Length: 375
Ligand code: GDP
Ligand code: MN
Image 1 (cartoon, rainbow, N blue to C red):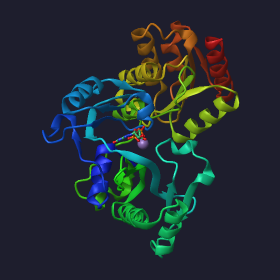
Image 2: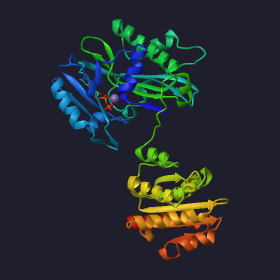
Image 3: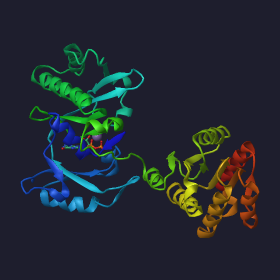
């Protein structure tokens, strides 16, 4: 999945004929864009309004000053690397409209609600209209009418909204998008519908059908940095628990299941994915990343190697302990099994770390350790 920033998503919507406010990145703001403006932090997360990432400026000068303040600042998890500035709409009403591919239904679905502007998860399900679109039938007028009438729209507004729905569905198909969400779809005081926000996710596997579309990896900063280290990192969003480092997807899933079943709190998992080929330094870097980004209380290294040497892992752990004094032996739980097991144990012999051989007891120990650290 390729997630687009709001300004990229809006450009894509505009290219499909959907109405968006006049706007530009703060660094490229044309002189002509002046008057009341909205200054918007570009991060791949919603709820910017509540988090202080959306500001209202009287004019161009104030907008640029605000953009300067926001740029480089933190908004939740993310550092704001781009700021988008656009004309301020005089909004009379905020609607919600989205087109997405519903994996359960196996077909596109259109969503619409008269309760737009707020987080859609907080809108009562009965206040959201859902219209599946069988891709073999395509979008039919009765489907559009159902949404339009469901929102209580009539006359000119109904006609305009229908056009928006048609173009949104067209964009979903033509752009190979997984999600196109407009929230709010602003209905302005002068009676126009305008996409005031845009959340767009594209199908990565279809990128080849869109020359020039760069595959932008999605993920949290931790997950992206993990990728740079040639490992697969997944974070749970819960800091201060266990970070588990494993080899192989099977062992990774089993460890995750077991730790959670034992009542442990998981901060993240890392699948080594052959990273030991890069030597002990790489293992140290992986542990450093986990400590810095996930702030775990316990690091659980759970490796079962059939063909590669466990010595690399052990040396990496030893290096990490040496490099990061905060990584004390009581914050580590190791399970090393397989190739050169004895040699690996010898590497860590004077470090005071507990090294298990069996899966169950190792997981139990990781959970206990983490609980003791947080008690
Ligand atoms: P989000 O909080 O990340 O979803 O960011 P949005 O772009 O949806 O902006 C949050 C809220 O700011 C919207 O729901 C609107 O209420 C308000 N907002 C955004 N753009 C405008 C605008 O041009 N005019 C007015 N009056 N309000 C706006
Ligand atoms: Mn929004």
